[in-house]
Length: 226
Image (tube, rainbow, N blue to C red; front, top):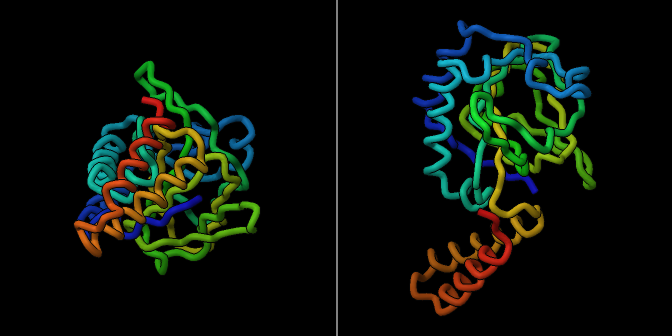
């Protein structure tokens, strides 16, 4: 399962973040990669936990908390604070899978990476290449979203970032530990929640809204870890 959330960030928020990135102090992106991924990763990142990364990450986190589709799809329990990367001409990240567990620097916390997220921060026409490619049983799905839009997908999905051929591609990325570990269960809950919202929108007193809502919460109680 993957989900595109358009316009996660407002144009003003995108502009604020984007204006801070070109002159930032970038480091080798391999610093946060595991041994195997390090061999395939060629990009730059803001230093994890740096004042700038924290400030820009707070903008992303605040917006996530106010985005119902993200909350419904991810059912977040814990999140790794957003990181930021840059791909210049020739830079890429080959096929890889995100690690299962990630430590949060400066704290004893560990996050189980159930979901990965990428927030695109460059307009598609400003660079060539740089597509985020997800590989699954149905083949490949390619994404190059407008600035401010986010892609949420399973962290265990094989994926890559194509080489940038022109311009610069900026993005934010992070991982989510869901209250519901199982991807299929989480997808079922998301579909059920959407169906309830559609019925309620059509008719607030629809007779199926209350029983379906009861079933939804019963399933959450059955499947969720807190």
